[in-house]
Image 1 (cartoon, helix red, strand yellow):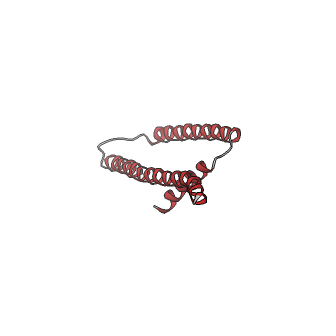
Image 2: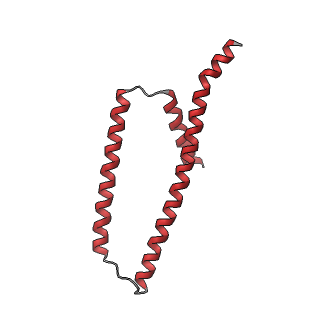
Image 3: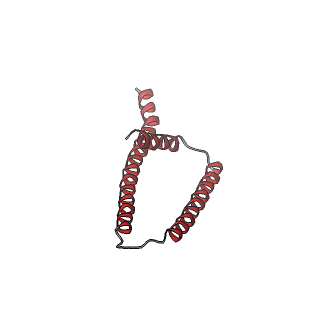
Length: 111
């Protein structure tokens, strides 16, 4: 009986972090779908308004702004990844973090 309790005490945190990772991944995937749908709708509305002559869009300026924004976002993501990489090298990756990442990845791919 002690062996079963010990096994459950060992596996419970791993199952919990995996389930939490799955829940967070599912939530993030749903939010991204909604955000992309809204952005796509706004862009479609802008193109329709521009084609009908109600508004005028300076596409050269828009392209410049979008390229700068994408570069800034890319730099920020690279900075965050580098910081996380330094922290991960300094601290050992725990089993809980691995099961969270596995659950998160599973939710992104499967849900």
